[in-house]
Image (cartoon, rainbow over all chains, first blue to last red; front, side, top):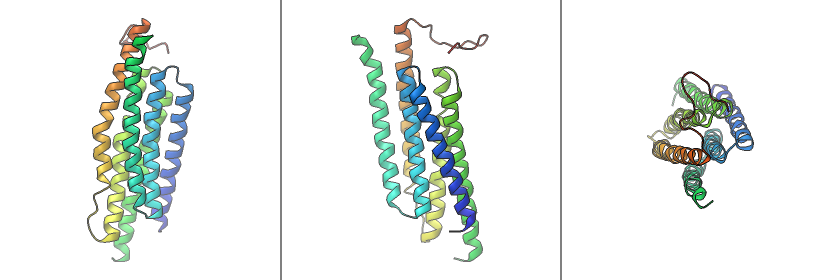
Length: 92
Length: 118
């Protein structure tokens, strides 16, 4: 791989790792439950982008399917948690 | 493929990947940095739109020029994120508004004159 591609990919991977850490910090700090769900939303998007750039680095198409699955199940989980927040409080 | 064409493709891919990573970093920084929930909910959109589009386009450019034929499967992720992102955000906003009203907070929280307290 030429340095013209390897350096920007390393930079992107570093940026995405830092972004995952920031989202994780919000998930730990987040004063309310909706903040934590928002942080989870941000975290799974960043994870998906990390896997896409790993697919660029290792030149394998398997990473694409993993990214697609993370996008799919992240959406399902995030929506389920939002719906729980919307309805769960009614019972209390 | 000639060497100069390969170099050009690598440059475009690297630029797109770096831009996508930077956009996702700025969005996540906003999630941590902004003060109230209703401000924070805007930030991850940056990573979900610009970040995803840049990295999928980088994949499309790189793999298409490597294999010598058009490869657009990666765009499926970008389209999927474009469809599902607003749905999650709307559900989350509705949950936040509902829980805020149940708690007795005045919704919407921030006004133009005074900054939000949290």
